[in-house]
Length: 293
Image (cartoon, rainbow, N blue to C red; front, side, top):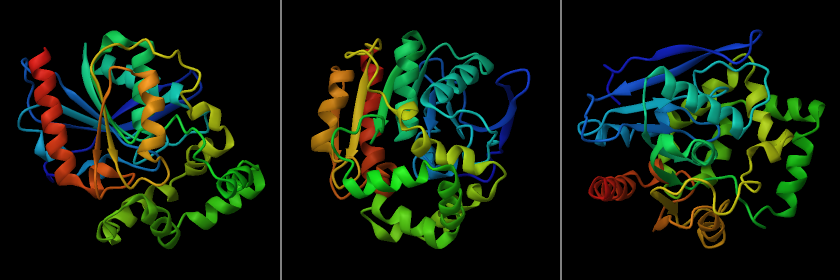
């Protein structure tokens, strides 16, 4: 992304006792004919994970992207992390920027947060574009994964595992299965994902999904959910963690209006793994949204 785009921050007061500095960036000019777009990264991600996508759309849309609390360059306080917390951050940001309605492009946990927000504040969403969303898992979690999450959920063992994980070698090993194109898992990407792990408080946010997995699930939402507007699922065909043939039907129970697009030769990090094909599909979706307006 352009070096001219500067980091901006706002101070979010979660309670009288707890405040967090949240990083965001803006791109492009206000366009009254097109809804602004808000990009939300997935678990462990940051604004930079969209660096192959946002520049393709900043000439036609006003674009915002932010680091979810606990990730990227946003602060990482000792709070209860959850989809509800991230949805509250979305609402705070829309209020801050005086945005009546946005298109959200979300990946994985960011997409799940967008669905949670859209369910509770449907009037604020122009459209949802969901890249390999998490939050509904079906029977995809195998036995060893369940055992691992059980270990991480133990405070003592979890902190030991976190310390062992917070280095470039371990980060590279964790990113590898999320990419079909292994050349994308390079030193730059690994460094981007490693740096936030060194921040004060990173263990609170990074361990939260394993310590309290129900806080990151969408199972409890009504099916269909309250959001009835345009919704689109874009999935990497090679996502081994969230295989599309198992997971897409679950999301279409939540969002029956959602069309589904499967991109071949792409895994979980579809927007970065297969950026050209993802950008083509996103362009088509945005054009369709314009026609429906």
